[in-house]
Amino acid sequence: MPVAYGPGLADRVRAAAPEGVHAAADLVGTDEAVDVSVELVADRSRIATIAGFVRGAQAGIKLLGGGPGADPGTDIRAAARLRLTEAAEAGRLRVLIAGSYPLSEAAAAHREIMAGHTSGKIVLVP
Picture 1 (cartoon, rainbow, N blue to C red):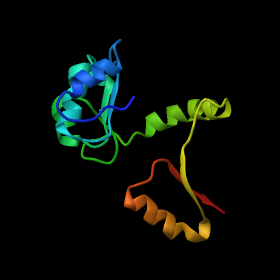
Picture 2 (picture 1 turned 90 degrees about the vertical axis):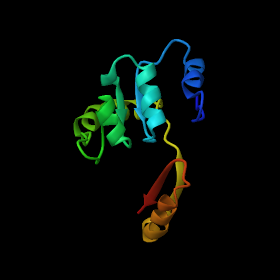
Picture 3 (picture 1 turned 30 degrees about the horizontal axis):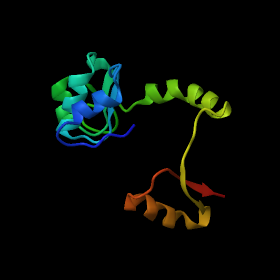
């Protein structure tokens, strides 16, 4: 369930997850996102950020991606591939497609991605 950022974020997350939060992935990188994750998840090894590298490093959480001191996530992706493939095969994984382009229109697909308004994957079709 999505929750809005801003004052009261921790309370909104608690209301959405009354049994507690056991892991958090910060995909925004704000101090608020990192601080609320640390507040709600007892085990800092179960918190990761792909955007808040400075604050994440200060908080002692996992840094993932291409930022300074971050784990590029190679092992995580490798471990997830089989489970994701099995989930897709069983129909338990839903991939949202925002748009489909012929390969000859790859530049238009790239412009759509760069505009930042997609909600789903962009597919290039040969």
